[in-house]
Length: 207
Image (cartoon, rainbow, N blue to C red; front, side, top):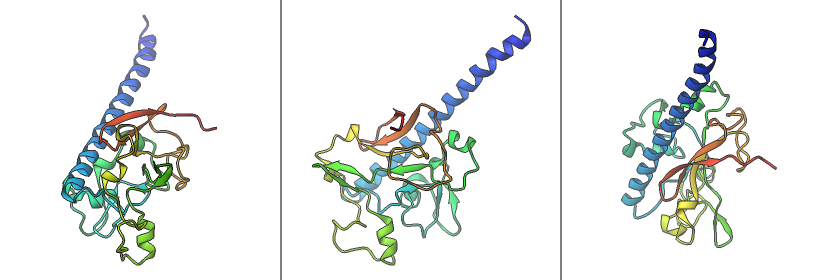
């Protein structure tokens, strides 16, 4: 076989291997985040981290109370002091290869978990806390307060995603523009579920 033909075969195969490696690294990162959430929840009487921003980036600092990376810093070996820092565990290699973006949000947290037929935000809403000047509501059921994991007792945790890849085609609440235009892993999005396992969710075409 001519060398040019061998190259034509080798390049797609190499690209496929690279894509698989990037996806595996992203899955590994989400598993670490899941381990951090589980440890945080265990240390705080069952409360999930929060309140959080709906859309999460890889940047964190001590003043960003809605950043999951900031909240989980002690569990992920991060130091949220001074200027913003990049949390590599919140970076997806496939997402990085599509940069630069106008906005750095690459994950979304599930703020609409259906409990008894009604949507509930188990993380609490950081926007509400921000609008209150950073003063949390005293009521545990207030929109700015995170819920206990047990509040999802009637939900199938292995089938309910907690964090998922974000892009402009995501079938979730409309998010920021200037992010990844399409799923960075092609035909799947990586997701962390509320039982803290990670799996690739097939991309469904938008209606």
